[in-house]
Amino acid sequence: MYMTTAELREAFLSFFKQQEHQIVASSSLVPHDDPTLLFTNAGMNQFKDCFLGTEKRSYTRAVSSQRCVRAGGKHNDLENVGYTARHHTFFEMLGNFSFGDYFKHDAIRYAWQFLTEVVKLPKERLLVTVYESDDEAFDIWAKEIGVPVDRIIRIGDKSADKPYESDNFWQMGDTGPCGPCTEIFYDHGEHIWGGPPGSPEEDGDRFIEIWNLVFMQFNRQSDGTMEPLPKPSVDTGMGLERIAAILQGVHSNYEIDIFQFLIKATATILKVSDLTDKSLRVIADHIRSCSFLIADGVMPSNEGRGYVLRRIIRRAVRHGNKLGADKPFFHLLAKGLVTEMGAAYPELAQQLPVIEKVLLVEEEQFLRTLDRGLALLDEALRGLDGDTVPGETVFKLYDTYGFPADLTADIARERELNIDQDGFDKAMEQQRQRAKQANQFGVDYNQNIAIDGKSEFKGYDATEYPASVVAVFTK
Ligand code: ATP
Ligand code: MG
Ligand code: MG
Ligand code: MG
Figure (tube, rainbow, N blue to C red):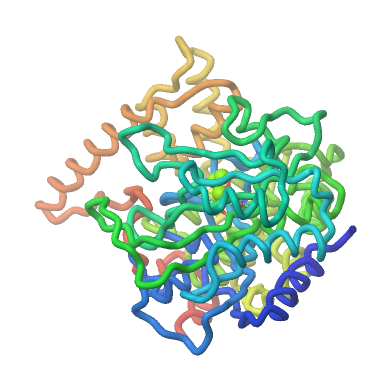
């Protein structure tokens, strides 16, 4: 059954509304008052306190389509973009939630009903996993739903000394609500490489995970202990783009309507004829995360969230350069994104002028050093002995040409090389020490220090932006 991505989003929300769920708008990508989290990475984030029992709402069932970014922190898919069919830095997570209301039976029943009756997926293409010791979930699938037992796979902990380190035990971060889960996979067919979950080929893209149903039962403490939650609850997450791919009869998320539009727009601007080029996929992915992050108030900077944003922009600009771009192009794509997603996200449309300006400033700034940095890297690679780019080269690219280390690693990976991350970290540390000493004499050399991405959002780095951009945020 063909559905556009927009129709699918609506179908999901309205199905759960019929099951008495409150439709809740997506929250910002910048988590509200939660320093444990870099970016919103799942639909449940905005309901964290409801699961913990410290916040009461007027409803006990909710449904949402949540914008998420996984480009840092516990869930980080930046390095998967361009390499798998199913990962984005920005994606939408469809989810239904129960706060001490229904539990395993209804969660499984609703999911199956939506998939096989509403959007009519063929049952024989679906298989499910459960947490190793969760006999209850196994029995619901086998006896109540009627999934053949050879298509129900138990997944255990990664090793005996790591309880709860399983793909079927979901945790939002190192602390917070968590619990065993059951996941639904779709088999895209034998012609695609990959094996079922739990098999040695599971990282392939033949069997794609579409929906995770988490049975929230614990609150993980910072010392690792698990405290039971006041009431067992349900949190589910389904990747909108992954299910859209199935309904649109394509394998990769990058072939769905939204992505094809963005890829064609990029190809037109850059005059590229091969629409399957990996760099086009990366750019199409990155324009979504960058635009939505800026719309949610993140500004490129040298630390914390802003540095993650800057890194993603620079990666996109570098991929544009690879495709032959000789002037700023990335900012032009924001308009296309608004055409595709502005109706569902009016805040994106509203912020378009800001997004365009911020991206343009960033592009112009990086373009000033990109070519020279690439030339330096090429030269270093020509003389390379072995398959590792030395830490000093990575540091020089960072310090002099504004290449974040992950960007250099991205280029190295294309040539089947690694970077010496330890060497880079050491060079960074030495620079920090030098800066500290210099500071004692009142000189600030400490301008270009990368941060691990964990620091808290401190506001906008206004100095680099035109007054008109800054004004929008300071109103
Ligand atoms: P995977 O194993 O494929 O990386 P995951 O187990 O990390 O996915 P969950 O944390 O269980 O994903 O998130 C719930 C759902 O969100 C997934 O089942 C998937 O449909 C979707 N999803 C997760 N990460 C991404 C991503 N980076 N891009 C697009 N969709 C995603
Ligand atoms: Mg993942
Ligand atoms: Mg998974
Ligand atoms: Mg999962």
